[in-house]
Amino acid sequence: MLKKFANSLVASGGKCGVVSCAVVLSASALLAGCSQASFATDNTSARGKDLIGQYGCGTCHTIPGIDTANGRVGPPLAGIADRIFIAGRLQNSPENIAKWIADPQSISPGSAMPNMGVKPEDAREIADYLETLHDEK
Image (cartoon, one colour):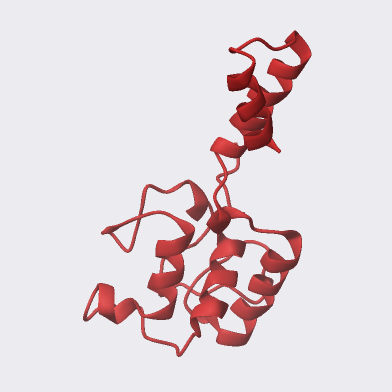
């Protein structure tokens, strides 16, 4: 839809009504911050929450929203969505969190974080849940 409007805007020499331009600018601003990888839905984050329980992540980590996740071996995961780095070396992104969860030893050999046999698609859904954990302000 935006592409069609942009083409008609170019064809008209850049003239558009105030409302039309406002709509396009608003939609463009919203879409600019989105990527396919960051569309965590309530369903995927709920599934990720379930998977955290299934894989036993709470044995080592304290994780908000998961009653049984009160481990003290690994770092607490409250506010993980707001951290700049994960594993001390990867830029924090849903993709990198999923890579870390799926195969931490390939990223940081000898790390205390073991390979738990998490399937890549499950790691992605767990990352979607962790992406909802922001610092409380």
